[in-house]
Length: 109
Image (cartoon, rainbow, N blue to C red; front, side, top):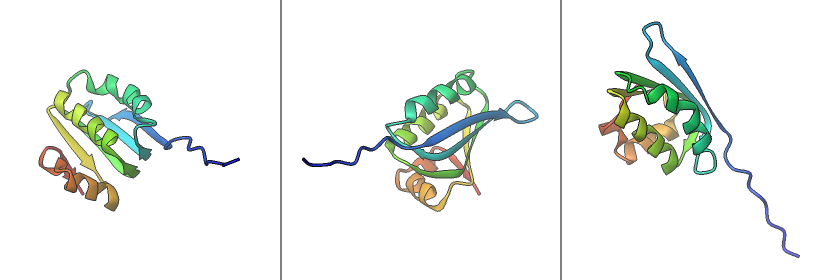
């Protein structure tokens, strides 16, 4: 009998905090792909659906994202006045640049 490795899906997390003036700071960690994007979206949507002037995504702990992660960031951009991406890893920064997201989203160092 053929054995196949069962993939449980990516492990990722989202946490929402607010800075002193009420700007949502959304920290994404681990990996984002189609297997977990819906649960992460459910965590961040309440902070983004109020159409804040600015949203900051802290990506320092994000190791990987596929097109689902890109869609998540773009959805936030359609609701918020500005989206800032803070400290993306080298691989995530490269994904952002290749897809042209750096033209839509502000990438902070």
